[in-house]
Image (cartoon, rainbow over all chains, first blue to last red; front, side, top):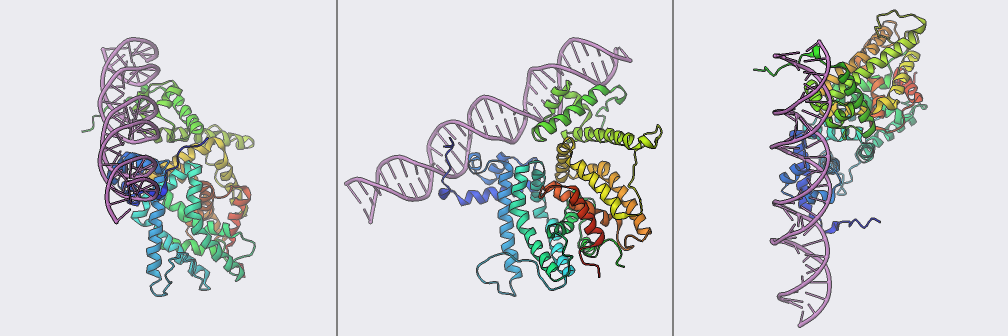
Amino acid sequence: MAPTKAPDSSRRSDRSRRAIHDAALALVTEVGYRRTTIEGIAARAGVGKQTIYRWWPSKAAVLMDAFLDLAGRAAEDAGAGSGSGAGSGGTGEPAPGIPDTGDLAADLKLVLRATVDELNDPALEAPTRALTAEGIVDAKLGAEFVHKLLDPQLALYVTRLRAAQEAGDVRADVDPRTALELLIGPLMHRWLLRTLPLTHAYADEIVDCAVGGLAPRA
Amino acid sequence: MAPTKAPDSSRRSDRSRRAIHDAALALVTEVGYRRTTIEGIAARAGVGKQTIYRWWPSKAAVLMDAFLDLAGRAAEDAGAGSGSGAGSGGTGEPAPGIPDTGDLAADLKLVLRATVDELNDPALEAPTRALTAEGIVDAKLGAEFVHKLLDPQLALYVTRLRAAQEAGDVRADVDPRTALELLIGPLMHRWLLRTLPLTHAYADEIVDCAVGGLAPRA
DNA sequence: ACTGCAAGACGATACGTATCGGCTCGTGCG
DNA sequence: CGCACGAGCCGATACGTATCGTCTTGCAGT
């Protein structure tokens, strides 16, 4: 029923793949998602349109792959950079995790600040916005986006928060998932809606509010 | 330099305007934003394309107006409904505000639950998603969206939170704006990314966490 | 008469598909 | 070992369709 030939991936040109990734990311940051066209990507990458249509089902899929590639490389770089003093070994396994110094608020601030920097990085902003927006409207793509990009990152928070619960730093009756969203939600809200600038100070504020609560401690 | 004739709005057909609003909303919920076209809206509304292009600069603008209209009417209805016992008079001034029973958590839960219901309303979901997504990518439109739709709603929270601060229910050193985002952010996050279903229970959980804090009270 | 309106023709893009040589492989025969 | 040969991806481009935003044409309301 579906002899819709599957192309032989072993013969795929890695050169073209990378050129397409780069062209897609460049165009998205230059002219925006709406005006980024498949034909434009093909032209800029020096590639035939069919080479794109052969391997990807949609513009969003191209961008998703390109972004995953970019994020992967960025993670490797970051891993190599931050691991300079620790000698992380040669495996390249990323999983940096969230530090656990025992001071929950300080640990969270560190990571939330990093997230702020990431969101403010001009090289990542346009593609991230484009993919997020597309995922908001297209449920299928959104699920893929969440599963491939967001979940792995958020899992780190969950483990750290669980550890905090065991250490008695977080109430036992709170779902770590909810706690996580209490931290990430406001950040994303401000970034997505651009209501106010996204700063380290804001990240700190969020952590303090979330951990300490809005109500005064008796 | 810009004698780009401004159409005479006094001669504008209100009938066409409403028909366009309705057609735009219907199409967006039926076939999604991407496949909603200006020509489709015109055809469904029984108007000429030029009538749309004359009064709106973009598809998003049409939808924004249509949505504002819808929200306005919904607010009137809700106001009329809830005001049945109070006899709000003939002004129709909406401004329901957030109740202040003295119990901050209970008041917030009430409003957050209402927001959850609104977000889950199938008639509002598609257009809201479409506009939000568009605003995420298009800064200009996003600002308009926030200014016209979100800010008025959020201002209610700010006043209620300020009252809570004066009553000593909220720490004085917290920016009401931040407190607000601590409540709304997680809700929007879950709705936009569809990570988990959005329920009343979740709204309650958010309020409890935000007010009480993640850390156990000594 | 003036002007907004419905209807639709029009050129400009972008879409997704279909082919066309060119090139690079793997294979098998001599 | 060497070389022809077929398969399949590649760049390129032509094609028909869809949508865009503008422009033109009557018609109707004021």
